[in-house]
Length: 448
Image (cartoon, rainbow, N blue to C red; front, top):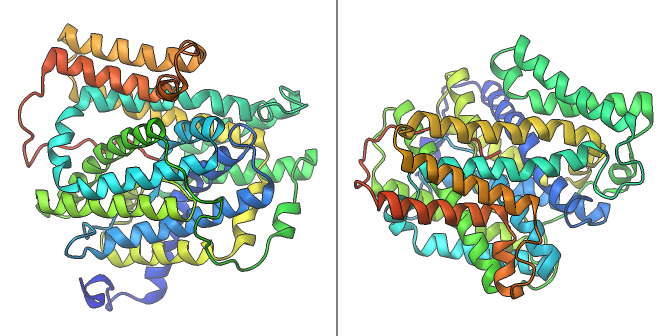
C-alpha cells in the first residue's frame, strides 16, 4: 500500500490529528493499565523505573503494531483502520510465568508464541473451528472473572500493602467506580468511550489534593527521551509450559481479532477473505514478536476503537495511522509514560473493576447472542469450563503436588478453563459446520 492511499490529502491535517488523538485516548487506559498491573505490587513488583520503561515501550509497541496492520502489505497487515493494544488475557499468565520462572521466561514465551502465529497464520482459519462462540464466549468470561481479584487487590491499596483495606483506599476505589458508572449513565459517544480514562484522572486528582496519596517521584526522575532497548530485562529463556500457555493466549486473541476484522469489513463494505485474514494474523504475530524482543506485551485488536470509528463516522486508515504515530512518539518520552505511575493502586483498582467487569459482560453477551441455550450440552460446556477456570483461580494450590512443568499450565485458570471448553466442545459438538465466509461476527468482545 502506498502512502498516498493511506493518508487522505483532502482532509485538513488538524482534523486528522484531532481524530487520531481521540483514538489514542480511547485505548490509552487499557494500554497503560496492563504494564501497571504486570509490573506493580499485584504482579512482578518491579521498581518504578522499570515500570516506567514497561509503560513507555508498551505505548511505542502499540503504535508499531497498529501501523503494521494499517499498512497492509503483501504478506503482513490487513489494511483496515484497526488499532492494536496489549492483550488483557495475557496479564495473569505473564504474572504466573514471571513469578515461577523469572521475567526472561515471559519474553521467551511471548517471542515463541508470536513466531507460532506468524508461521501458522495461513492455517488459523482452520484452527478457529476449535473456537466456536460457546468456547470463545466461555474463555472471555473466564478471563474477566480471573482478573477481578487483581482489581480488588489494587482497590484495597495493593497486594501486601501496609494500609490494605484502609477506609481511604476503599473510598477512593469505590468513588472512582461510582464516577465511571455516573459518566456511563449521563454521557454518550466519545466521553462515554473514555470514561475509564476520565475516572483514573479524576481519582488521581482527588487522591493527591485531599489525601496526599500521589507520588510524583517516578515522573520527576524519568528522562525526557529514551530509545527502545532490545532484551531490556536480559536474554529470553524458553520454557515449554510457559510457551504453550502463551500460544493458547495468542490463539484466543486471534479468535477475538477475527471478529473485529469481519466487523470492520462489514462497516467498510469490504469483503474479507482468507488471504486478508492471513495477512492480519501474520501482522499480529509479528507485533507479538516485536513486543517480546523489546520486553513489552502480546498485542491484539481493540474493539472499542471500532466503536469510535462508527461514532466519528470517519472510517479511513489515515486517522488510525496518525494515532499509531502518536503512540510511537509518546513511547520515546518516559516522562509522559511515568505519569501513569502517579495513579494510586486504589484508584487503579476502582477503574479495573469496571474494566474487567466489562470483559465478563462481553463474554456473557457473546454466549447469549450466538449460543443455543436450549441445548443442554452447551450449558454443560459453559458451566464446567467457567467453573474450572474460576475454581483454579480461587484455589491456586489445587495442583501444587504435580510436577512444576505442568503445574504452570494447571495453576492458570484461563488455561484450564480454555482447555476444558475446547475439549467438551469437541466431545459434544465435534468441529461443527465449516465456517462460512459471511458469518455474522460478534463485536462486543473488548480486548482492553
